[in-house]
Image (cartoon, rainbow, N blue to C red; front, side, top):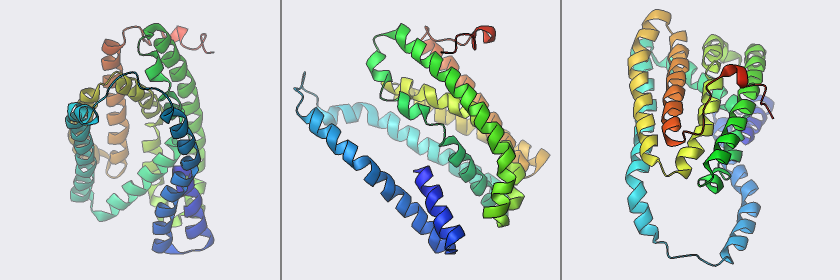
Length: 274
């Protein structure tokens, strides 16, 4: 979706100069493009699985009742935390800072969309829930690959962000320092996204709710002093520290859920790189 969105943004804002109308068209057409791209494969998979015999009876509403409270709660808490950050930024720095931050997070989202390993891992993990050693091995290899790829993406993004923004979005050139600080969260964020499919496979929706509560707590604790100390760049400092803190919390909780998985010895981290 982010790739489609970037393409349509370049088309409507840069080539056609449609302004706000072009932005709205880009958002709508990006989602439509993703839907059309996935539709053939989705229909093919549905035809394949619809012919498979059912192993037992599954009551949809019972499953929904068992998991909806945690899933809905996690969604609400996550949205509340994001909105709280915007309100704090608006209260302390003004509306212009909110615009710079929103643009910076948009750039961050585009870069992280180029690290899609978690979407590849998501359908694989449930197959290995009962094969914990193999799951831990797959997860370790994924983390190693994602770590190296995220470092390369970070280096390239830090170099190219200023010329990219100055050419395509010159009005947001003031956001470049903020973008560079937020980009520091790429490594921890990309690794944390690999943990989420494991929690989902083990039906740990409650853990996701706790994670969002913890992230909201870190935001409210870190954001005001960061803004007071650094101004607008302090927003990026908070995002980077919050993402790192969330990554540590996710790793520790994952260790309790899957003791076979560990990143204990950094010296053994790279020699085993497949």
